[in-house]
Image 1 (tube, one colour):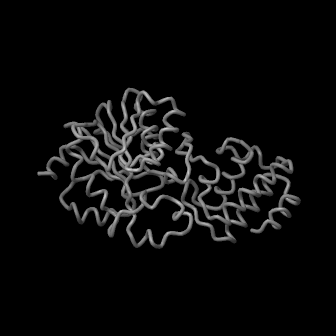
Image 2: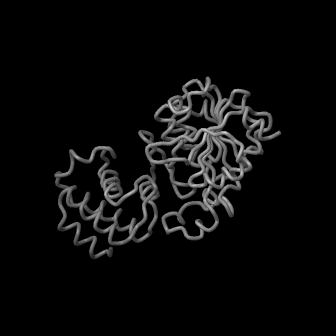
Image 3: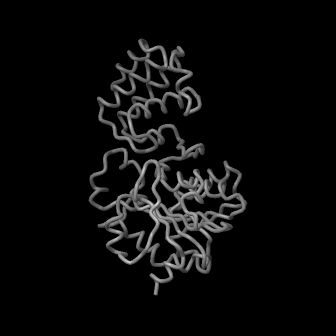
Length: 305
């Protein structure tokens, strides 16, 4: 997509429907990669159009035949051009990302929010993990933008949440989101390498979406994924370096009847090879199977022994 083609498009495409078709065609032709809030060209084009028009991102149908002003058309065209020429995820272009109904401000200091744990929290964690007890305290490891910590605080209204990340830059982004949601009195941001700054702290629930991508996969990332902080992805040779550290130390930070939930992507086979005797509950979602597990404190105590 060139500047000239953008200018031509702005002069000849008049409705939302026109721009939706055009976006799908251009994204498909250009070979952009999805996976940062959308999974296909249609949803990506729809999101960028609705954002450009300041419309609800889940309401496309009512606006399809709406005619757009020249300024609106130019705004959409500019977003489409940036998406194709920079290959940055759409969320970095718009400065926002969504987990279900929750919006978060983001930039390139943090990974674009996306987590199956978020889906589990929003749908009611008790439905997937019936052994979950009363949740008064939550630890969110590798918090990034703070999205999971904030969703946890909103879903468990009586709980206090510690949101931990090794990156001071990420925590600066998280701080803005915590403030935006008015949760500064219940969500504490902690700069820590996993549990290192949490000595003596115990929680009813630990959630973790740590780096879990293998070195080989990171090296082969398309430009969209290369735009994100490598620290948020890099999990070592088998992808589970950080996951191992979490497993080794989690028992010291869970209440006796506590529970931990960890997302590990496609690393289940490797994980089960490392921990063959650990009984886990694998929590499937609408978009995933075998990528998130729940483990009770008692099992982790056995592991540490």
